[in-house]
Image 1 (tube, one colour):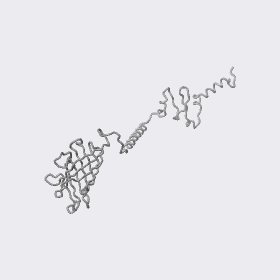
Image 2 (cartoon, rainbow, N blue to C red):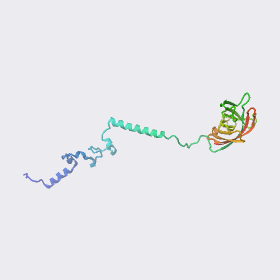
Image 3 (cartoon, rainbow, N blue to C red):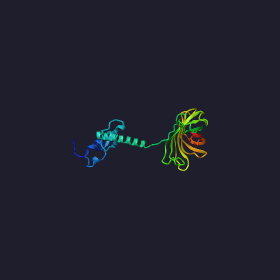
Image 4 (cartoon, one colour):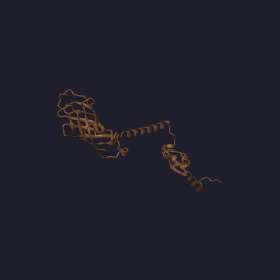
Length: 262
């Protein structure tokens, strides 16, 4: 006999338990704004709120495979945008690196021991007369001949350097370059010479000399601004002292003491 009325308490409790399960809740009618709420996903019997805001079926996979960016495949447009961003980043990095126009070099050149002082002593033979002059005037100004200081005169030289004051003594190098008269009042020369050594310990090395030579002074000082070979990074000074000067021909012999840090 089935009687109408309320079901037994045990049946009512089972009904309430079923209504509390996620499946039963999903079957219940939803309100108009339920689609805005994040759904629950089940993984290993546990309920987790989806970070993507949409329901998903979660299998027994590693957690890193359940990231939001793996929920749906990227479209070709999205892939193109990603590649474009990477190319832009590489270009920006390359431009940033190219802006560094200078840097400090820690390594030394092979065979270079810095901060060594070398004293060089030789005689400079400047011959402007005869059949084989070692100094040749290549240019003059409009008033050079009438100027007391020969202002505007430019000469190119390849003068021998010897160990003694006589031209017949052993030659150890050449002074190659030019000098010009650059003072309108007194006889002063602008010297731009390379001292090229051809014998001895420094054969093949050069010293660059550049500066003013006050010819009428007893001792003149001229800067050493560089060098090559054994004189890399060279700096120092040269002292020049006239030994002989022929007022008729203009030939001269000059003693040089050169001090070079290198």
